[in-house]
Amino acid sequence: MVLLGRNQNGGFPVRLGFVPLSDSAPLAVAMETGIFGRYGLNVLLSRELGWASVRDKMFYGDLDAAQSIAGIAFALGMGFSELRCEIAVPLILNLHGNAITLSNDLKPAQIGKGEGLQSYLTQSWKKDRPFTLAATHRFSSHHILLYQWLRRYGLSPPADAEIIFLPPQLMPRHLKAGHIDGYCVGEPWNSEAIMAGTGWCPATSADLSHGHPEKVLLLSGKFLRERKDESIALSAALLDACKLCQEPSFRDEMISILSMKEYTGSSEEVLRNSLGNQFNTGSGFANASAFHLFHGEGVNRPTVEKASWVLAGLRSIGILPDVTCGSLSRIYREDLYHAATLCSQGA
Image (cartoon, one colour):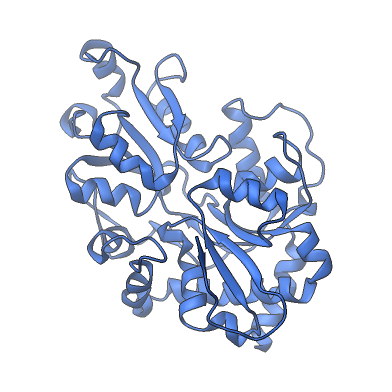
């Protein structure tokens, strides 16, 4: 699904992909508030079903850039899957933003934050299939976080839990239908199940791995080589949007934008559950101040340390071989981030 750009400034449009999630906010905000236009950019937003679509379209040249899970940068850039191409990450779009949601069939009083899960599966599991959880992609932080959570409480996939992969927006309906028992996903798809009364949240990603990088801006190598000025302008525009998304006074407007059918299509009530002050977990309330971090000290810079968190996590769950991956700085480009910062300051 392609959204027509609102800033017709001539030249070839920048084809920018995104998946309908709360942390697509910088892209939606940059479009709706005219930030892209202020940088002279003609942007076409392409709404994708899931991360496999983003990966494939980046590889085949159907997108110039995209909001992406961090792992796809390494899958494409280092050839960890069958598809390989030149890419660059000039900007981290946000930290955190994910949570684990379980079916209401698993009661909070029995499971707690996860400490009761092993006992429940050993003594009370009655279904004629394995305990099944969903993540969004093999190379996603959601996959890493699910493993971390299960291992924290003495469980080891695949022996104790089967993990499958689904597009984010399909997870609540599969949970409701009883096809899966839980999932790890970005907002608002945890809150959709919580507010509908079909799920509850034992842990957020801020609880599981505080400070972890989440979505990145992914540039195709061809776009960067042939249109470097626009690549830097795009990064600068999204950096400005990240700053705006972090402003408490802008949250209501951001929620209103995200609720539009072109973006998440979720209700403002659902979106506000994690983007407001308090997060209704389905079994109580938690402080939501760190649920989504779009901007702040160290948030947006694409450092080797952030890249290393992703690679270490993927290795720990057996997705990547324990081999040297070469220079991470050829993918996580602090030079482009620095150029975007200067461009933003001069805008």
